[in-house]
Amino acid sequence: MRSIGNVAKDAKIRAVAYGALSNGDTVIVKSDGTVGTVESQVGSPVVFESASTSIISSTYDSSAQKVVVAYRDVGNSNYGTAVVGTISGTTLSFGTPVVFESATASNIAISYDSNAQKNVISYNQSIFGYAIVGTVSGTSISFGTRVGMGTQAQDISNVYDANAQKIVVAYKNSSNYGTAIVGTVSGTSISFGTANVFQSTAIYETHIAFDSGSNKVVIAYTDNSQQGRAIVGTVSGTSISYGSSVVFDSGETAFVDIAYDVNAAKSVIVYMLGPGGNQGANAIVGTVSGTSISFGTKVVYDSGSGNENNTIVYYPPSQKVIVVYWDNSNGDAATALTGTVSGTSISFADSIVLESGASSYISPTYDSDNEVVFVALRDGGNSNYGTGVVYNPSASVLTSDNFIGFSDSGYLSGQNVGVDSTCSVNREQTGLTAGEKYYVQNDGSLSTTPDTPSVEAGTAISSTEILVKG
Image 1: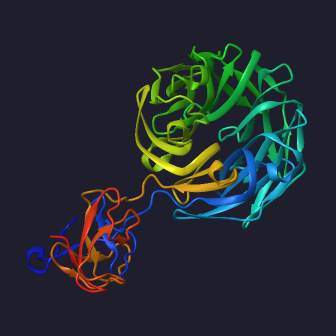
Image 2: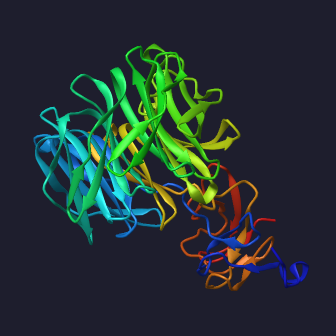
Image 3: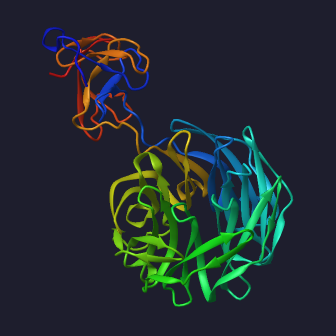
């Protein structure tokens, strides 16, 4: 931050604005030396389905610049349903839900095909696997005709392979064997190649990610001994082949998820370990080489038991991964952690609650236009309604040290700003009570009650004036 005035003389700080400022805004110093308003990291939860929901999956449609949530609408005969969400900052709104399967839908997974600019939902209906292509227009979504995968399918997951420009669906077949199949989107339909088994014994769940560094897919799953395993798949045309499966944890694993860290060029798997998750929530870093994958040492990110529904997404602005899970020690609140990969290990910081109600069926996705993480979930604190919340890990939040005063006027981003600072009077406030001490809140507003952290703003000398703290 570069001062261009005489701070000692006029008690103003001059700096460059990051984002627009209005008269009287509370002002903080950002890490790059610019100044701006306090930003909220977490938006208000917004209901997308006013009925009980389950089996929720979300993706980001970068062409339409919308999030799309696919889910089972328990309140509507368990029909497969999808809804389109619009994000602005951390504010969220939804269109009208649309049914894509007028029957009980299970094992729902959704991915965005950026080549076809379509959303592909794979799911199970009456034990058979299907996929359907959705097109977003405005705040709604329409669907083509469902296409059968030609087999029974459970524990379904899917991902877009950007190198092959195909959708890869992983699942367990009628023999409970681990299987994957390659889908090609054309218009509003999808066609499939021949399914190929990757584990010729029973498995319990599948989760899949695309490794853009090696142009492979990585499938994480639990085998019939409940060991955690991963295998590398190579898509060629409409077929898929595999390397050898590798055990990443020989303990009793469950609630597995996987994401690819583009910056570190690693896959990160999160999972519960031990009967009932009594060995906590864990993460482990995998490195793909050729058609194989190797792993570092697992790291516990929450030692409590029962922390189920572990999910993970890569967050490009900070080049980190974000883990979202329900925290059993805090009423199953949806909680986010930031993970930093270094070599073959990972460390965690910045725990934050996204939704305080008991949360389940959590599904995060990255909105590349707003640079935020969108999280869809079932809110047990609100009748199990389908709910969305926006999390901005990069937001400029209030700390105990970064408040410097109040904007003395309105400014545009990039302009030189005048900030009424220590021992000066800002005359751009409203609704204050003279003689009262005020504190900055985490949303940038003022209150006579301290927030966390406790940051003193100053003392009101009239309803519109505040003497900035000395």
